[in-house]
Amino acid sequence: MFFISLEPPQDLVELRDPVLSIFFYGRTVITKDLFFSGHASTLFLLFFLTKQKLLRMVLLLASIVLSVLLLVQHIHYSYDVLAAPLFAFLTVKLAGLFLKGLSDSNI
Image (cartoon, rainbow, N blue to C red; front, side):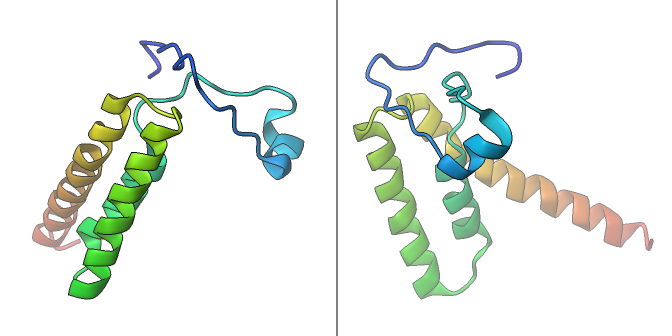
């Protein structure tokens, strides 16, 4: 995202948060931070980290519904949403390797 700036979709719905705009953004609408979907990746991350079956199914369903709605509303490109579960999964795996390395070093 830092090196390659993507243009927003033509039908992008500008979302304005009235509270955050007071403290952070002002009147600026950020439209070029699309890759990857943080909303979808957060739900997928919770799905990957949860062990309880019922909660996992609810989180998976919520992740899929949210991902579809992001696409329907033209908030993200399709590859932004498709990359979200991949990045969430990689985050869980990398954190697991990091924690395993810490426990192996007896710190």
